[in-house]
Image (cartoon, rainbow, N blue to C red; front, side, top):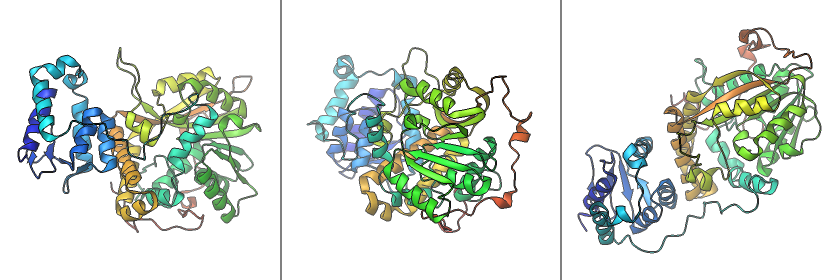
Length: 464
């Protein structure tokens, strides 16, 4: 057994036909792999069984969430994930199909022999409790969407406060050169959205998927609008309502527990949808776009802030990440930005501006990971070790995906033009981005209760 790690590394390299840029440490104390490479730890035979039954990212995720697989002390999680992603994208690995021919060939027989010696063969271990059950009912029905949102967002507002910090904003920040903290960058993002929407006193704003209410609070306080925020997360709505009350804005801000398809009371002068459209689904996206179009006044603007995937490779159908689907965002679907623009145009919108914030999301996710790690003991107390590991894995992996251009995020500004075709936008981008106030008007970041907050990481600068 003392040679277990070496045998497994040799078998894996032989089966894949490439040298995996990771070291492996096994439960017998042995280690093997390229010197200096980041190290994965197999804590028990169950880790191998999970990988044998699911030789893909779902098997890796189950093993990590359950604690059967870990990153060795001194190794960097980002480097481990970068190495795994690099191997998964190699042409020889993408072409690999573990059919009978692969298993019965010389390389396959060596791999099977190594697994037999390690005691890896056995029943498939049960998935960790944090895995979402298979969806029941029609995809993106209102009841199934509520269940999917409950799985991700209703894990506890205190946990999200640890991760997100006082801003309570769960979308990418806007890292202007002057931004020295996550809270400042999130305030800049909220203000950017308000400026793109051209908000002015007396206007009526709808925020679809309003989260904990940060955007509607900002818009009401600094731009004088009345606002309606809708979410189907009960916990988000409860905290958002409390924040509105404590801010003294209940006469101008309404928070509803409501599906976007149930909003009856347009028109609105402006609509924001930030980090929500990813939950809509391909089959429902045109319904979403057309309903928002009907809710706007002629000349009204929509700001759609949405994560995008790269276009499909020729001949390869879109397959959502099994880890993200089972553990993070059940039923979530990403579209290329071009597809989103086309659907908005088909609904009647004129698309006026598309801004990519891809690098901004990588920076934001690294901040969230740093917050989680700095408060790890408290996070585990709040949601359990398995769920805390889910969040650490998904946020770190997502940071790399944005940085390496495997996914992106875009703000799309669209207009419902008038009957005469007029968009009622200033002639230049510089004009419609001009803020009505100055930088000194930006808000002091708030804590979850709505009052002045203190960063969870003290007065530190960002992890940039």
